[in-house]
Image (cartoon, rainbow, N blue to C red; front, side, top):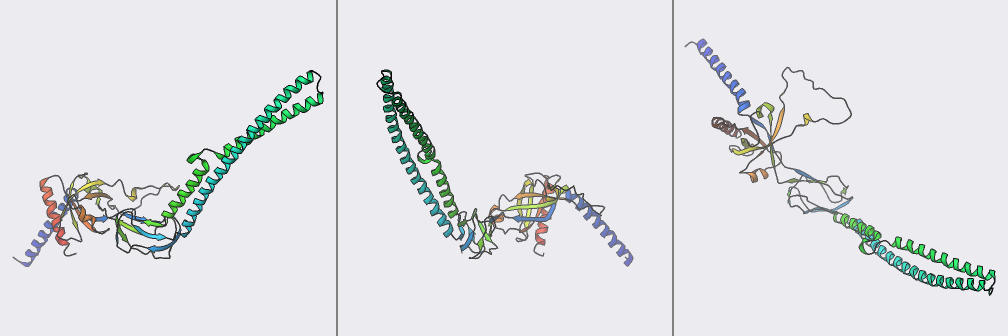
Amino acid sequence: MTPDQKFARYVKVSLVGFIVVFFYYIVADVWLPVTPQARVYHPVVQISPQINGRVTDVLVSNNQTVKAGDVLFEIDKNTYQLALEQAQLALDDAKLQNKRLDTNVKALEAQISAANAKLHEQQLLKKRGETLYKQNSISEQELESIRANFAASQSNLAAFEAQLAEAVLARGDSGQDNLALRHAANQLAQAELNLSYTQVRALSDGVVANLQLLEGSYAVAGKPLLAVVAKKADLVADFREKSLLNMQPGSLAKVVFDSRPGEVFDAKIETFEAGVSDGQLSANGLLSTTETSNRWVRDAQRQRIHLVLPNNTQLINNMPSGARATVQLLPQSALGQWLGTVQIRFISWLHYIY
């Protein structure tokens, strides 16, 4: 065989190999989809104080495992301790003020009793005076004086009754239903709550990450000061839209992690993401922005799926957030599942190299 014939054969073999690979890629992209765009994500809880103050003590270190409820750092509590004492004084003052009002109510009730007795006396004098006036035993001036005293007694009684009504209204309900006591108790509860906020606690189990907080820093309410990486992990993978044509929740998959080359793990699709950021519209008051591209064939849109490893939940939970993986989705057919397993096994071996 001449060199030209050998070269021609090499070219033919290469063309046949290229065509075979090309068609395999087209078929595999739909029936045996695989993506290296997969990651392990852990929810990150940003820890923010709910009050302002100087940080007096940091009780955790970087990469330390914490449990929900563990104290992470403390804020200067002197100001909030004084506020608690002031609220307690306000509650005690409200109780004392209610006692004063109770005494005032009793005093007014006693004055009303005396005014009623006085009014009854004046009523009898008025009746007797009118009888004597008819008998010409007293003058008209004396009768008018008696009537004036009776009217004054009526007015005096009405004034005491009005004062009593005002005192009862100021006193309010008795016991714990009293408005002043409830207001003071609410302030006391708020002061106790603020004092408890001086100890900032973990909201969930996890690991403290990228700790930069130092004693002496000033904490501002609502501003994150450290982060806790939760133990629960989520494995997500991004596929081209057409690659998910034949897939649905519950479809089988194989996963290879970059950190564990040569190992293939069974998985299945848990859910499909509702959308991606490219499909999100913001109500910003601006006109719509059209998509522009100079390419004849645009880039394929990727959609995200969430996967679970039923037999290796603890394994994925122990992986760091951001760990990379390669995901192979498997079709329903036995042949397709065998080809997919061979494909992902080959990729797992390549992970020893790159």
